[in-house]
Length: 217
Length: 217
Image (tube, rainbow over all chains, first blue to last red; front, side, top):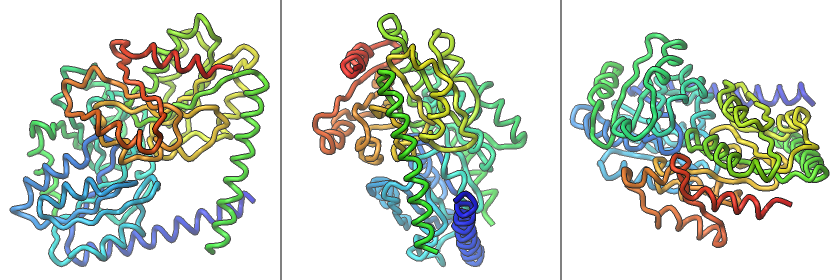
């Protein structure tokens, strides 16, 4: 049973990797730079996206893929900004996969997109294990979640190319030790950019915008 | 390939269900009532546990299983209270399963436990799909995560026997519409107990304690 399981799981993973490579090739051909936003429920992924779109949409053509278990709430918010958006409902699935993203790409005007933002399902764990064919994974954490999260969820640090710490306007109301937050990130990845932001007040957003622009090909 | 996959996945699930039934039988034989706490990272699962232990430990003998991807931070906090605790590190796994819990049970003094609290890995999605052999799943959400979480993550509502809304001391600082939070819960499960608490101030904890006691056999 065990070896059969391993064989089947490997075949599923290999199939996923092939589709991720196809997505990557398509995005490259179209000259699209892509970002996969990963964070727990309520970390502020959609709020950050809205702020980034607001700051980038006059200079770049943006597209969005919204991942959620249920509802189209997030896609509706993005739609209001005027950028093309496709909602994926995973119907209980805990992460986006390359196959779902590949299907979403078919429904976006790829010729007219410079930057693709993918908002993953709210989950700090599972989405880290799946290559969607994106260029950069970005980890979104927030002050109310606590300063121990990078230490307790090291996978998000390992796979991310940048970490955003959201809701810093809430720092006065929570016991949150910046040192304790930064230390495990710097230990695992000394050159990791860490952006402290508040999507509520707009503080720090410009630094994320600059980083995004520096990655656009 | 597809039918082979389905067969293998079914065998894995069936094996998990058998182990869950074994856990359930063992817990029943020992007269233990068990609760599986599920919530996103930072929702306050450990803080709630600490409050419940404080309020229950003079009347009941308590045991704890702590699930985390990495570190023994949470188990250390529980250990300070003097109750027996076993830490499970999933090494990246996104949920506890019956097999892991079965092994943890072997390391707890079951003869001397009335109430077993299991704290799952911080994840609002995957843990909802796994029967550990526990009596009650309890969903832990928090104000900073946003009022839209029950609607966006309906699985937690479907499997839970009670919902705890933590960090209500933060209500003045967040846009949080109670109606919007309650509505999808009441729609899916009209008689669901919903407890508003603050593990920081202690507000509302006594109601959760009463509910726990009402379930103890």
